[in-house]
Length: 272
Image 1: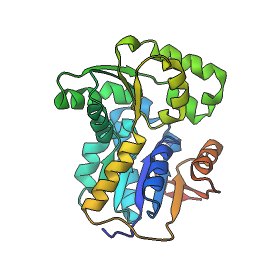
Image 2: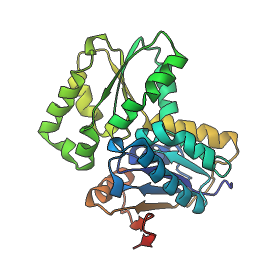
Image 3: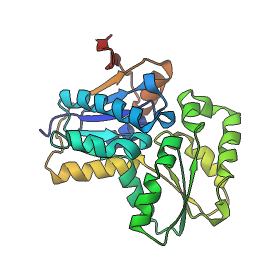
Image 4: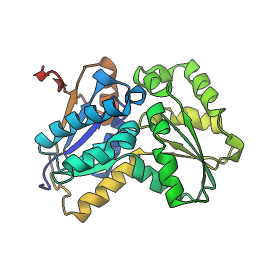
């Protein structure tokens, strides 16, 4: 691994852009390679075996691009595939998941009762519940699958009025009066954090997302291994398994500039 090698980031869609944006702000000297597996969106509704297969193929691609680190910028993939990816690729590059940094952030809030919302794959895996119980046996956890939210955000439907009703309907299934923290265990959810805050208004509930903790964890790992880049001209590349107009708009909004996206179908070995 070389310090001037790029950082790979992948997700099934635009959610991982929240982590890519956090990395870009914290480490502006780093070059990034983003792979959005939009052909298989959303991961949250896929089986664990399917998610593992998709992420193995993508991680191999990013390794072959010379990445010094790969960030699994998806809670569903982090929950069910991190151990497998570490087994296959940890000798070649640093593997960062979205779950462990968020777990640490939750523990650091010293919350007595945390609510967790995420995709069905993330919640059903029990990963957050298990990791939190190991770190703090006194912490009460209420986890809720919210499967409509990621597709809604991916289609930019979250900007419509009805989205607040959908979000509120989900949140009302949690014991909101008992919570002192709400963990947004999906990288899409920072894009609806404002609506969530409006719904939680008047309650002393802190919202925590996984973007900044993941970026900070990556920074610490790169610094520890002496792999922080010092480039004045970092490069960013974007690949999608299936091109979408919504991804282009979102990427340009996050990075504040025109983005060139390459269609890279890793499953048929075709590139456009």
